[in-house]
Length: 210
Image (cartoon, rainbow, N blue to C red; front, side):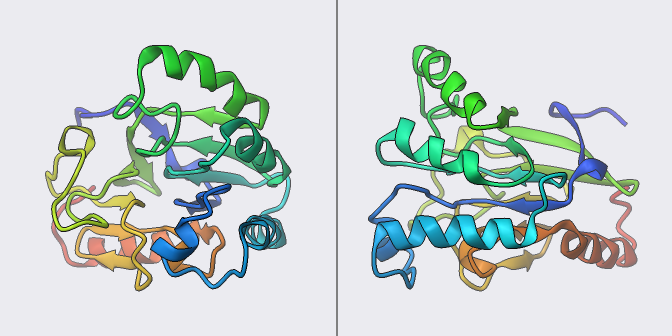
């Protein structure tokens, strides 16, 4: 089957997450996060990550990794265990949707020095034979009344999609899209086995998503 987007091997992934927002003080208010300070939030995110992710695990991060003084906040993520892949979100300094080519060239080494492999904004592949997309953006949904970044969102052709961006606290499955952000999953990465169960349920519906 022809792929619409760059190919990625989802079978290699152990955990998935998004929207950590390291270094972003206002996210505590905007997303109603229960941390008394930015320092507490950043330290807790690192602790929760490393409590479940081993150094040899592979983690897919679906964007909005860090904000604030970017060299400082990105360098903090070097403490995170695992082999780390980043699909850029709108707040990432390596996002083609929101950043200039000059900015991407400038900041890519900062991310890479902290252990990140930067991926395209939308990736496509298979997980145990089931076709799957991943993007920071959902097919539908936003933190605001209208869906932003329409040009960066994947096209909905019925393929299951994992995403971030919405900061929904009741995350998880919504039809054929699944929100993986930390606000929905205890401020920690989500084992990909949870995605496997969702994909198996979709396959059980018999809609030919393979």
